[in-house]
Length: 340
Image (tube, helix red, strand yellow):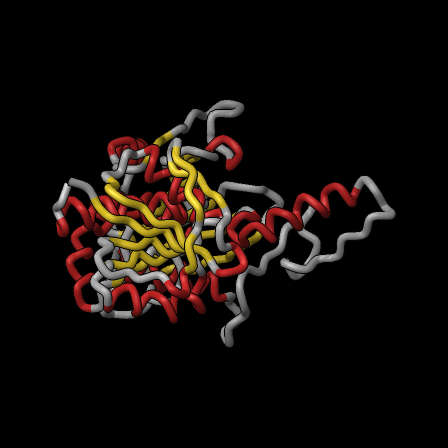
C-alpha cells in the first residue's frame, strides 16, 4: 500500500524535479495530484511515463491526501499550507516561510532525520535553503568527530536558484553579448549576470549581510548545532545549475585531512572526488542530475590550530530542493505514516 501524494507548484523548475525524483526513486505512490495556479491550469507535466494535467491549487481539497510537497513560494504557502495541514495532509514545504518556526522541524535526512517527530505540532515540515542543505551534509559527520567551532563559507550559486526567470536572464544576456544591438538589461538580478558575478542574493539586512547569508547561519544552527558560529558570503555566478561552496572549518579538536577524507567517504549522501591533479575535483556542471553532494579539495588550514578547507558542490534543484523534499517524504513514510 502506497501514499496519496500532492505536488503543489508542479509546473515550476523544482516542482517538475520533485515529480522526476519521486519516479526515479520509486516512491510508493498510490495516487498523485499535481497543482498549479489558475494561470497554469491544465498544463501537462510528466510523472515517470504518465502525463498529468495540473489542477487548481486554490480549489483543491486536501482531505484524504497523505502528504503534499510544496514548491510555490512563501506567499502562496502562507495561504495554502495551513489549509492542507488542517485537512490532515502533511506539508513538506520548500519555501523559507516555516524554516525558523520552533514548532516546525527543519530537516536534512542525512543530518537530523530524528527531528521529523516534531512535525505533528503543525503538520508541516520545512525544507532548508539550497546552499545550507549541501553544506550541512558535509559538516555533520565532521562535527561528530571533532566538534566544529566556526565555519566561514563563500558560495558560488547558480541562476536556477532564482527560478526560471534567472535562467532565462543568463541565457538572454549571454546571447546579447555577441549581438550588441540586442540589449538585455538586468531584471531578475541586480546587475548583469552574464560573464559576471554578483555578491548579492536576497535582500540586504541591517548588519550588512544579505538574507541568503543570514539563512545559512540560522539554518545551520537549527539543523546541526546552535553552538556553531557561521559567517557566509553568498555570490550569484553565471552557471545554470549547481551550487558550489568554499568552506573553511575550525574544529575544537585536531582533525587530520586524511581522516576527514575517510569520514566523508563513509558519510551518507556524500561523494568524495579528491585527487591532487588536474581535474581531480568536481565542478557544478558535473554534478547536474546527481543525487550526491560532492566534496573535493580537502586540505589542512595551517593558519589556525584545527582548521580544514573543503570544496562542496551539489545540484541545487535536487539536493538543494526537490531531492531533499522527497527524502523527507521517504523518512515520513518509513518512520511515521508507515503505509507502504
